[in-house]
Structure formats: structure tokens, C-alpha cells
Image (cartoon, rainbow, N blue to C red; front, side, top):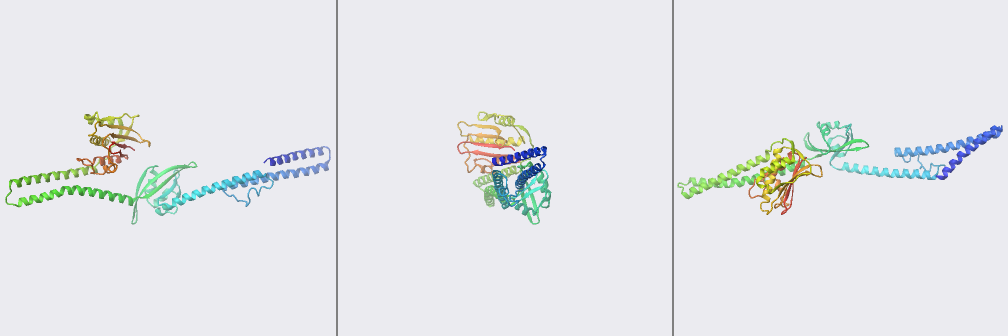
Length: 440
């Protein structure tokens, strides 16, 4: 670069010197010598202009190559086109082009890799502009599922299902929506999910569609099988002694004489039939409770007020039940009656779990978790729940108590699901339990 600068300065100084000589000769009326000096000045100016044109042409080629990613537009490298340009400059430009080319090839390879990966998965994915609804890209699974090789906007997806464009417009990032699709003999249930991001100040939305029909059918079948097993077990346990005792009464009644002993035996059989029949009625009533939860009527509930109102129902256990103060004034939007029902059930379970503890303690607390969601916790220092039993306690009619219906926790979890929340347990045998009500 220094050599090029010296050369440029020398050319400029030579032009200035020749100009002064030409002016001096004209002033001295040496016209022939002045003409020769003028020709020399033109040659020097032409040479300087040519150098500038070469530099301009090389820079234009460099900019063109970067702009259009055409690194061999002229068929020559900058070094081969340099001519009289400095070697350091051409080498720097060539290195910059090679680096840019290598970096661009890496980006293109990554793009091809991710496109191949996205086209290989069986999950339908497409990207559209959040502002114009124009579809930017669809993977192969989406094209096969919708039967569209090309879609300009999400409105074109109406050819696959009329409700799909409207569903996409109201689908917020992080939410899930289920769409039932029936095409000729094919029936599917799609779960839609989306996420938003911004690329070059352009908001985009990624949508995924997954057919979960087979998964739902398997889960539904599994749930029905569990329910049928429970119903069969309970009904058979009640009906078997009823049928046996009814047969005994029939035989006794057919006899001509009924002794006092037979009469006592018949009374016992009738009482047993009554007791088992009453148990069967209670079982059916409990089943109706599981399936007949009323629709929540949400309202804004201060958590402190909710906890205090529930603890008032356990006045005889004030030494056992404590409310831990929360760090802030928390509120939840829920049906107060249904949430109170959950807390009452959890406190009763905690009292049963701590009945043999020398210093029973039940703590009610509330807070905000790492996801920013409000939770209510019921903690006890009771016997705890074995790991293999923790998920089964939410199954209808499952109980570990000698006397119990086994529907309390199942109904409680259903109530939380109806509030778009969750009910979970953290427990260890011998170390107590924690039940968490997490609200959306």
C-alpha cells in the first residue's frame, strides 16, 4: 500500500510540475517546447485517469461479487485483475471475498441441512408472515397433508379445511388448538401450535400440525378399559353376595317349616343384601360426582382470603394447620367454591396422613413459580406416599385408606384441569407430601 501511495503522489506531483513547466514556456513564448510539454501533460493525465478507472472497475467488481454472491463474475480474481494496483490491496480484497464466500457456503449448508431435516420429519410445519399472512415456506409433510404443493397465503389453506385460516388467525403463540378434519373416508384430529419470531424486522409465525387421532384413541381406549375394570370389580363384589344370599333365601322360603335359627339366618341375609345394595348405590353416586362436576364460574379471589376461609372450617385443628404469609398480595381467577372443595379435600387427606405423627403439621402457602404462575401449596409432615402410588392416587376410585371412596383427588385434578391449571404431588415415603395447585 505504501508503494502504491508513493506512486500516486509521484504521478500527481509530475502532473503539477509539467503544468508549471508548460505555463512557464507559454509565458516565455516558447510555443514549440510548450506544445511538447502540453502533450506530456495530457499523457500523464491520461495515465492517472486510467489508474483511477482500473481502481473503480475493481471495486465495482468487488461490490458486485458481495452483493450478488457471484465471486467469478469476470472469470478472474482481484489479483489477476489488479494490473497496476497495489498487491496488498488486491490480496486484502481477495481474502475478504474468500472469507465471505466460505461463510456464505457454511450458511447455505446449514440452511440445506435444516430444510432437509424439516422435510424429513412427519410433523407438518409452515411459516407465514404475521402481517400479510403470506406463506413463506412449507415442509414436505405439510404439502402432503394439505394436498397443496403451493400456497400463497394462509387463506389458500381453506382448500384443506374451511376453518383452518380462521383458527390460525386466533391461535396465539404457545396455545394449542384441536381441529377435526374429515376428508372422504379419512378422519383426523389435528393439534395446532404456533410460535412467533422476528427476522430482519419482519414478524413471522411458525405453525405445526400433528394428527393425534391414534394417540387420543389409544388413550381413550385405555381410560375406558380402566373404568370398565373398576366398574366390573365394584359391581361384581356387590352382586356376588346378593345373588348368593338371594338363592339361599329362595331355598329357605321353599321349605315347609322355618325354624327360629333359619329365620335369624334369613334376617342376616336380608341385612347383608341391604348393606351391599346400599354400597352399590353409593358407588354409583360417587361415579356421578366424578362425571358431574359443574362448570366453573370464575371470579377474582384474593389468595389470603381463600386460605383463611378454608382454615375456619377446621377450627378444632388450629394447632396443626398453619398459613404461611405470602410475600405479595396474590390473586387467582377461579371458581371459589370448587377451589375450596379441593383445599378441603387436601387438608382432610393431610390430617389422615399425620394422625400418627407426634407433632403433626400442615402448612398452607402460596406464591409465584419460575414460570410466573400463581400456586397454592398444601404441605404435611405425614407418612408420605410411595413413588409407585403417587400417580395412581388420581385414578377414580383408587384409595389407600381402609375407608374411602377414592374420588376426592380425581375430582380435584379434574377441577384444576377445568381451570386450565394443574394439581401435582411431590412426596416421599416417611417424609410427608406437598400438593401444588398451579393456576394458568
